[in-house]
Image (cartoon, rainbow, N blue to C red; front, side, top):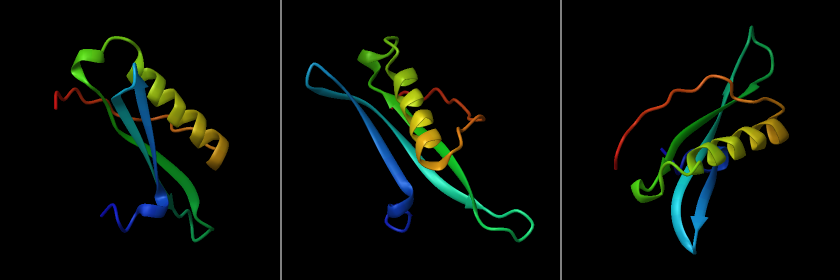
Length: 88
C-alpha cells in the first residue's frame, strides 16, 4: 500500500534531546465531485508519541504542523479527524 502511495504521503517526525519521540503522516487522497477535476482531500493519520514523552504537547505540535502543511501545499486544512488512544 505505502509503496503505491509513495507520492501521496508526507511524514513528520518529532525529536527531543536527539531522540525520535513521535511522528505523524499525511495521506493526500483525491476525491471527485460531479465529474469535475480532482479536489485535494488530505488526511492526517498515525499521529503517535512515545509513551515517556506524552503530555508535553508533542502530538498537538505534530498535528498542527500537518495542518499547516496541508494549508500551504493543498490550500485546504483537514477539519475532521478522529483520535485514537493506542499504546504501541
